[in-house]
Image 1 (cartoon, rainbow, N blue to C red):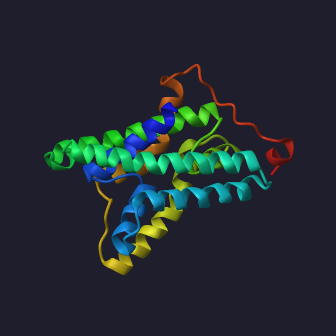
Image 2 (image 1 turned 90 degrees about the vertical axis):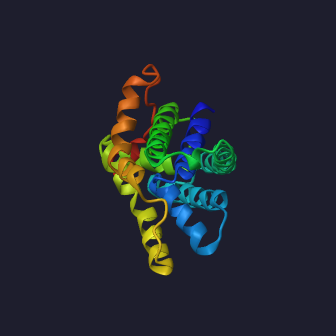
Length: 211
């Protein structure tokens, strides 16, 4: 629950700060501008697609995992809308540019810490972060940075397509660069310094470990 709220709040700060955001959120912002789709609805759709792709990555059908991640995505997308409304109402979007840069980067920091918390708990998490967890431990030998960068490829493709269609590039700014370069580093830092007694319990089946 802490991870859910912290993740949604961090994304809300990025959206309202308007000085860049995580790439998945930036992809949702650009689709909103291009097609008029609600940002929360786009994030929910991304989450469902991520949940399905995770089953391909682990090479087996896992109903509890799929249902849990879809439920998480439903609450996450709703809370992002709530926090975006709250921070807009508080006037964060009207703050000076330097303050909004700090707000957006702090939002990135918040959702990275959230990712670290619920990846270690490994009970229920956003499917996109389960993707990075799977990539990290099944494909990249525990390297958080490599898994994060690989996970950025789909939203970058979405952003480029929307940019070609509209001629506008939204949600991309200083905080986006901060997210691209720092996500894996912040998550790895949080693993050691934020609730350090909560350790990774990612479970790998012997058949999966050999692949």
